[in-house]
Each structure stands twice: as C-alpha cells, then as structure tokens.
Image 1: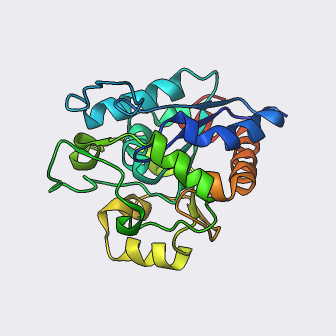
Image 2 (image 1 turned 135 degrees about the horizontal axis):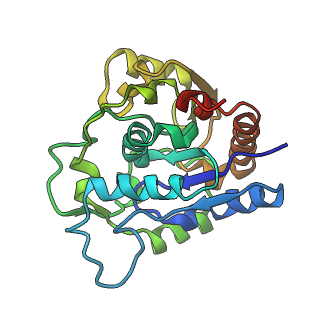
Length: 245
C-alpha cells in the first residue's frame, strides 16, 4: 500500500532536530519523512534573523511539500501553524492532509503588536506552556539548542485567497488543552486557530501531554501521522481536488 510522504515542521525556537525521534519511528515503518528547519532557526553563529520574513517561512514549507514525489501529510507544530496554513492556501494540490500538532490554522498574525526583532526562549517559569511528560534531559537539550524566533514569524501574516484549502482533511492533535477548549476558542474567533471555522473536514484528537508531544509522546504522534499517511495514500483527496482521475 502506498504511503503519502510526511513533512514535519517544528514550532517556535526549534529546528528539524525536534522531530528526530518521531521521524526515526516513522522511517522504521517504511514511511518517507522529511523534517525542515525554518529560515532563521538553524542556529548558525551570527545568523541575521532580522531579514527573515513570514513569507520566507511559508516558502520553505511550500518548497518541502512540492519537492516530495506525491502530495504530502504536512504536520505543523505550535507557531508553525500560521505559515503552515498559509502554505495550504498556496499549494493546496500538494497537501493530502494537514496535521496541526497543538497548533491551529491562524488567519492573521499571531501577535501583530510584538515588540523587538526576535523572541528568545523564556525561562521555564515564564513560559506559559505545558511541560508535562518532558524529561529534564529533554528540557536541557531544548534550552541548549533553542534559537530566538524571528519577529516576522510572530508579527507576519499572508493573504489567504485559495478556497481549495477548505477541503484539505485536517487533524488537530490537542495536547496542552482538550478539544472542547479548542472548539470554544474557534467559536470565540481566536485568531491563532480561526481557520478551523473555515475548514470542511476537521478531526480532533485528544492526546493529553505537553505542548511538545514529539518529545513526551513520540510513539503516539508517529502512530497518528502514519495513519494519515496510509489514509492519504489510499484516498488521495489532492488528486480529486486537482481533477486527476
């Protein structure tokens, strides 16, 4: 049975390395997986994050998806939900499934009033995120490898114009908050997840754990992604959207 390729995009402060354990589990089962580091987050000494734009992040995701041999399962974590949703608008025909990992399809800037050129990883006691299930060693690695988030990723947004994105089957993996809280946020029109009100095929999966489930529950995340890759390989909705028999 063919599998759809899987593209993994990490959230704020992270590079492709954040997905290593999940990617290894998927590859061990025969899946084609690529994890990407968004522009400005590679940790290179002296990197110029000031010049990185939101569109650069969108373009990097689009490049990863269009480079695959078939329409992909695109998994976006945390803050990557914003450029990920913009990518689904731009290349709907190359995305078989969207998977939002403790994330959502933002329809505007995550924080249009953010002040500064970048946002460094805050101290743990100032970070308003769920750390349940993450080991001290994992937290230490995170702290050591974290890269300040370019301001444009926080303040930026893209025009959304292609309604084909509405028909991409989308899975929301709810880890920090249960799905009923997420649904309430959608009903309130909260920007970071407002795109869920537009989508026609949304499945919520409750997986109580940290905001970084690729570390706290890697096997569960791998299993969900593998299921989506198999389903996309069996029923390529992207082919139907593009008119391919």
